[in-house]
Length: 243
Ligand code: NI
Ligand code: MN
Image (cartoon, rainbow, N blue to C red; front, side, top):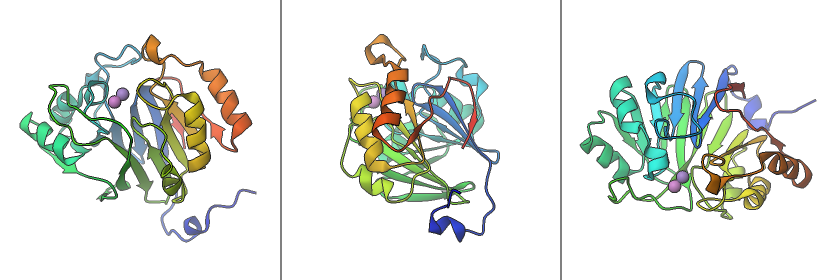
């Protein structure tokens, strides 16, 4: 029998349907009972993406940092769908100057209440320059908490850092971690991260988009099973899974 952590027994909210779809690289579509959160929507120029920016219409876009492989189609999608964009203060100002109507700035430990639950910004060890070389503040990760208490940690682009253990103390159900190396953690450091965060499941991202971040994901999956107590879930692009 699987016992839920204590805090989750006391929630009055009934379980939500949480669907996760990987769109390639760091782009994910989270569907919380119909409320759609899109992360780092790099689709048009993404060789791993199966859909274009015109095929998604989120309620909110979560943008972890300013690099082109994350900003991607944010402006186009936000303008077409009138979606709010959550990012750091500097990126929100840049988006506003580029015609995005609604932005919600967030910085480390800041939390926003949203219709599906809440969103908190956490640390990420990475840069954040914008595609036009403007200052993009600092990179962020996010913890999404559904109204039923379940938590998803979307790490963004990051290297390994010890305070991932603090994020893990919150009781993470799903951790989405970069594993592609070069710009972020590679496979072995991502496994150290899994052991700090101790999530229910771990989903890899930011790999195999280009040759330089190629990863043998079956070996990674095997290593997670051997070296941690956490279940790895390797998603196929475009194939939704329920949390
Ligand atoms: Ni980056
Ligand atoms: Mn990146």
